[in-house]
Amino acid sequence: MSDEPRENIAGDADAATATFEPGTAGTRAEAVVDELGGLYWQKTYGGKDAFESLVRTILSQNTSDVASQPAHDALMERYGGDGDLAAALADAEHARLAETISSAGLYNQKSEVIVDAAARIRDEYGGADAFDEFVREDDPGAVRDALLDIHGVGPKTADCVLLFAGGRDGVFPVDTHVHRIARRMGLAPADADHEDVRSRLEADVPAEKCGFGHTAMIQFGREYCTARKPACLDGPEACPLYDRCDRVGVDEVGESVVDPAEAAGD
Figure 1 (cartoon, helix red, strand yellow):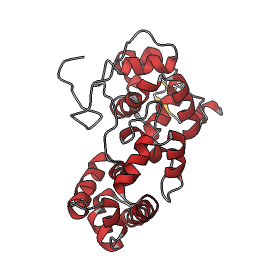
Figure 2 (cartoon, one colour; figure 1 turned 180 degrees about the vertical axis):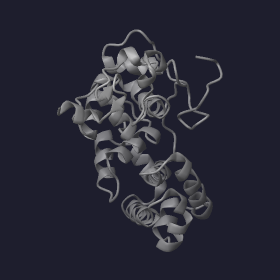
Figure 3 (cartoon, helix red, strand yellow; figure 1 turned 180 degrees about the horizontal axis):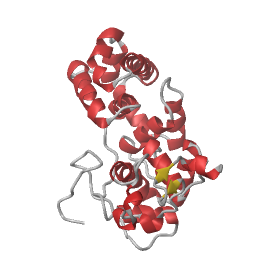
Figure 4 (cartoon, helix red, strand yellow; figure 1 turned 30 degrees about the horizontal axis):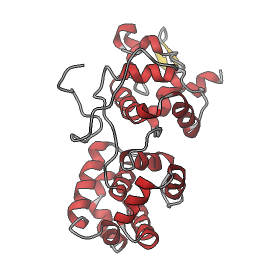
C-alpha cells in the first residue's frame, strides 16, 4: 500500500491510522478484512458529532453518497448555525426542510424522520451535546436500543452512529454491499438476513477491525464485487479476493449472477 492513499474511505482526513497485521487471521472473515487492508487506507473511527452523524445517515438511506452529501451540506448551512442543531431541526418547517434536502431523494419522508428524531433528542436528552455524550459514554447495547427506538432508524443507521460518532469497537454496520458480499463469499449463510450477517461478522472479525471492515467492504463492493457483474466474471485475476471467495450465486461459465439466497435454494 502506497504512502499516499488512493482514497480516504472513512471520509475524515484527521482520523488516525489503524493497526492491522495481515497474515495472522484467526477466521476467514478476518482474513478477508486483512486482505482489504492491502487495498484501502486503514483508519480508526469516532469523533463525529452523534446527532449530525444520525442526520447524515438518515439522509444516506436508499441513495448514494453523491446525492446525500449535497443534502447534508445544504441542511448544515441552513440549520447548523451556532445553536443546538437538534433544537433547530425540531422546530424546522417540514416543507422547507424537505426542499433543503431534496437532492437526497425521499425528501418528504426523510424530513419527517429528521424532525421527529430531533424533537425526541431535544426533549429526552436536552439537545445534541447531551445526546453526543450518551452515544460516546453509555453502554453500547443501551445506545443501540435507544437509537432503534427512534422512528425511521434501523440497524444499519444505529450501527453507523455507534461507529462513526461513538467510535465503538466491534460494530460492523451491514448495508446492501456488506450483506451481498458476506453471503457471496461464504462468510455468512447464503440466506442470512442483515442482522444475521452483522452477528456473524462481529463474532468473526476482531473488534478493532470491524469499522475498517465495514467501509472497506463497501468500497470493494463498488469497485469489484458489484451486484450484477462482479469482477470474477472476467477471470480470477480480475478480483484481488478471488481465492478467498466461495462465489455463491456466481456462475463463471454461464456468466450469470443471482442472489446467494436464490442459489442456496436451488
